Length: 205
Length: 294
Figure 1 (cartoon, rainbow over the protein chains, first blue to last red):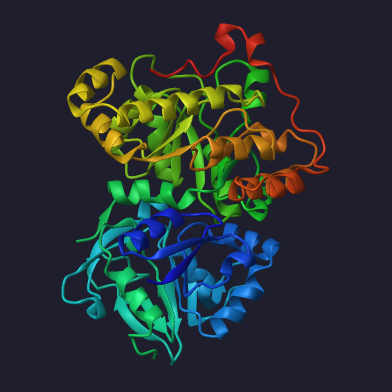
Figure 2: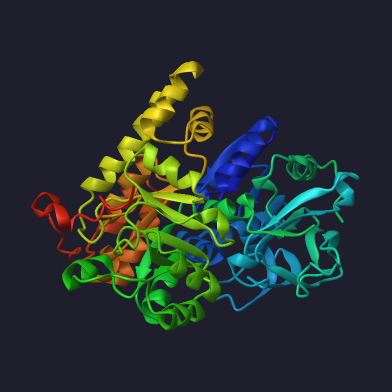
């Protein structure tokens, strides 16, 4: 059993907590630097990236998190969480943790009426498609050399051009990022994959 | 196949708003102040509820021009209100691309018998409720999020507390009922049986449930979280106070740290005067907004 922190400033942190408890993990809601003590991994959930930025900045969480990630703490960000892990985000007035060498455009698909769900292939999770739910999702515009792309949005006439063929799940070392929300589904394969990363059973790239 | 406007996509946006504060704004400048303070969304309005009360007359959907300017000013989701039952106002709001529609009792109702069929829209809806039956009827019509009605524009938390307690108490009651009693309970509630069963099983509403209507202080916001709200709407409470920037940021922190009185004490210090407020008992029956909706 691992002790996994879930950043609980705002957003859908309880959905991640429920998934982790299903998988028998100990979960800590992280709101202050002190809550980071003794965790084996951290999930940054979906929510509003500007809200996270304001609270992380007021609470002094940027420095503490960046240090722990640099020291090898496994981290997974979903949607807003991925935005905060990116090296560069277009048009965001807060700093990021710069743990994933990617360039991100927020809300690139448009507004909520453009949000969507669809089946995608994630080879590392096996042949069964994964139901990916994109809510005002970011688009990963560019990835650096050290970044492994775990899944891409398919190309297809119904797929918005801005996202077609772009990475939607990426990994760099022990840092995982998805532009969609596995925590909104009953499919626990992504959470299992992250726990493998935490346990060191997946070789970091 | 790619699908838009599904239940998961609509309810999912509400899930992303949880643990956050949604603030009423009437200008792009106010929207920016709200965003910088950490609001997870804003509600674009022609007037805040306290001013709607003062102005009287018929309160309608805001001018689309005003809403679009607010949408252009911030990156967080923008909500807007339509009148209860006003299908075309809702269609207009969907057409300009607002992220969430509030079918709201704060505006003058357009239909005194029927709410909008919200399943017919791709954009998600939030609706007010005073009790569990009302909440489940709105969800049955397709609402992707519920909020307590409270009594908007009063700066008085008493009605929001009443409505949140009514909903939570009834859910606890459902959880203790044997399954064969749920049909009669659905009949008594005036709510769809399947939703009553689902609520009993989950021990909560099947959609996100925020508090609204009367939140004026960080402590008010934290109280609503303590009573089981997933997040908080603040209407007149911010921009009718002495120092909106600080009050907005303080309420955001109070919601995140609602279980930590030391933090609430710290953010409450020296905030200046809250909105003046109204004792709800002095309102004439026709001045009460919460009774609108069926």
